[in-house]
Image 1 (cartoon, helix red, strand yellow):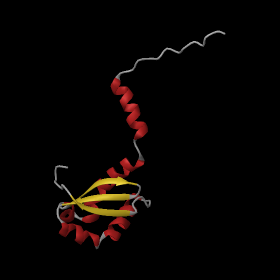
Image 2 (tube, one colour; image 1 turned 30 degrees about the vertical axis):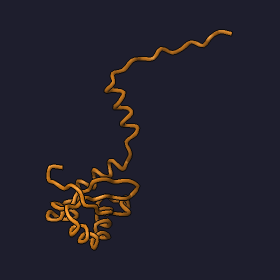
Image 3 (tube, helix red, strand yellow; image 1 turned 60 degrees about the vertical axis):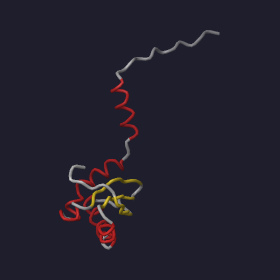
Image 4 (cartoon, helix red, strand yellow; image 1 turned 90 degrees about the horizontal axis):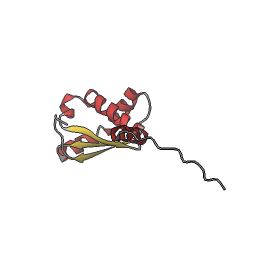
Length: 109
C-alpha cells in the first residue's frame, strides 16, 4: 500500500498565527462592550460616569464598577432606564441585566 503524501506545512510568523486565533475567538460581546463603553457617559451623564465604569460584558449582562456602595445603591434605582437607553442606542436588545460592583474606577481606564 502506498503511503499518502504529507502536505508540507508552511511556517508563519507567530504574530500572524496569534492574530488569526484571536480573531476567531473574539465574540460579539467584545464589540458590544466597546460600544457600551463609548455610550456610557452619554447615557448616564458625566457626573455618574466619573463614579461608575463598564467593566465586563457577557451573555447580556454588564458588570459596572462603581467607586462606592453609595453609588451602587443609587444606580440600582436607574438600572432599568440605563438598560433601556443603552439598548435604544445600540438599536437592539443586547443588554438584559446590569450588576454594580465596587471596584477601581479612574479616568485613566
